[in-house]
Amino acid sequence: MKVTPKRSKAKTTNANSEESAIDLEERIRCRAYELYERRGREDGRDTEDWLQAEAELAGERNKPLADEAVKKVRNSRSQAPAKPKPSRLKKSRSSAQSKTEEEARDGY
Image 1 (cartoon, rainbow, N blue to C red):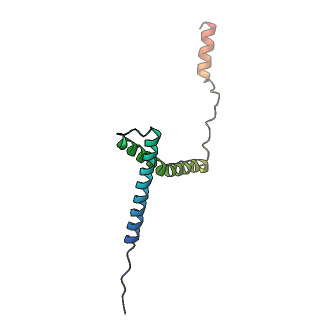
Image 2 (image 1 turned 180 degrees about the vertical axis):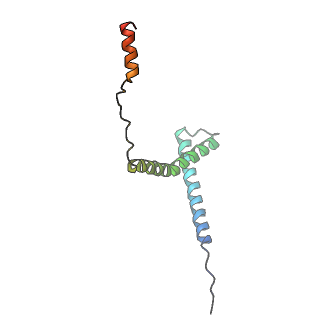
Image 3 (image 1 turned 60 degrees about the vertical axis):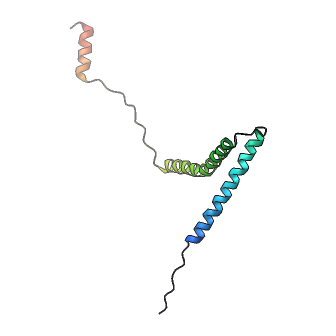
């Protein structure tokens, strides 16, 4: 019986992550340049532009995850059985309390 080793998918995963990292870096670079142009091409703030671009793109990447989490919470709340509202019952006076009040009015 001949045994063949299984091929690892690690190379494919690493290649994909490298491509996505390069793509992300390119998107950050483009956004940072847009910020630079918007500011009137003022030099000396390249690091600030880069960090702002990173923050914006990180927010875009995390927004779908946050939206999905909100949807899950809303769905779980809508599927949960409704909590019964507490009923408001009139509290009846005890007979002893009623007698005491009557006696107080009558001067006893």
